[in-house]
Image (cartoon, rainbow, N blue to C red):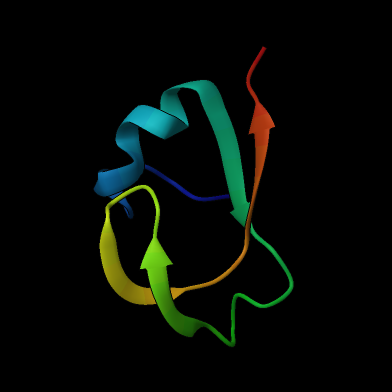
Amino acid sequence: MIEESEFPQYAELLENYEAEFTYDAEDPIQGYDDITGEWTWVCRTGFTKRH
């Protein structure tokens, strides 16, 4: 699971969703992070709505 303490830039998103890195987490690519609006190392992330 992705924790707010480890990724504070996603704090608002993590209030409503549980998140975890998917299969390519150990092989990130350089790309655009839609949440932070920055070019950085990214990988696919799975989100599940909190109930």
